Length: 358
Ligand SMILES: *Cc1c(COP(=O)(O)O)cnc(C)c1O
Image (cartoon, rainbow, N blue to C red; front, top):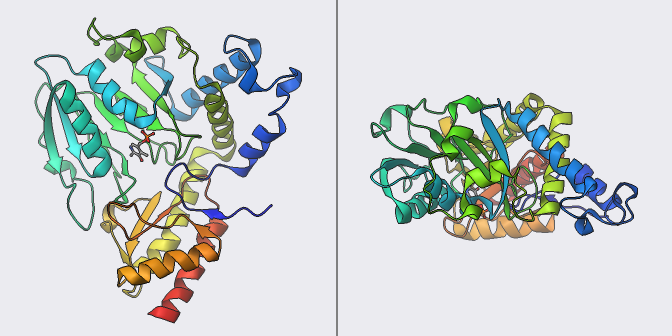
């Protein structure tokens, strides 16, 4: 079996142990004689999976009883709509912090539903960054404040989150559980699973329960957080296999330890950032004080060299390094499951490429 080093931004690399475990029990789940793919979502096999997934994520995130952990289909983009549908009432304003492409998408969706105030905007700046805390122009009495903890495309990441009077809502798709954080600072967090937690098409949602009660009576049941809370994410048939994989990943994170993963993530990123700070051949896209430990973005002296870089890296088994189509350049996505050896291999490749082309 030849596994490559997979730098894709999402869907992204999963822990090998998780894939192997899923493979080993695919045909016969724990002696049931059927796959978990074929099991009833009300049956005891799936019930154990679902219960463990909820419990593990509660533990990993330090959820008190005030919060509910939900699994919602539709990925992070569904949450761009669901958050304002539930939390942004008529006559209210939601503050959106526009730090880049993903934040822009979130605020565009919210603007379909209610009144949005842009509390800061650095979405067009290069080098890329997230706003400083003292730049935020927050609205007194806002329904909530929305931010994007890690801009997957630009490679900029919040290192300290603002303390807000209004409930803080965060899209944590590309850095959730890559580092510890204080959930109590947030009213709602959500994350598309395909970066750090599992497969695409599903989001982990954590909400302070009292906020779910704000939804207007006209909102259909399937779009209400309250429905997911009351039915433990089993109102409809959930994406069972995706939740099963997310459960396996949660076990893997618990086994590794969140603080160990955080340390490893910083060490992995530092290996590449050292090269970007080095000679000038490679130039980091994000400002050093907010550069991401998950998505490392950089440029080479010319687009032609970038093309050659991606091509030669791919030949060497380093896949998925091409930057997002909207910004080009290079992007190395090195989520929790991305192995240290892969980053070391990339660093060695970069040094050699610079020696030949610099
Ligand atoms: C990938 C990503 C999304 C989109 O996720 P989907 O599951 O495709 O909707 C949203 N926000 C951020 C920060 C992302 O990285």
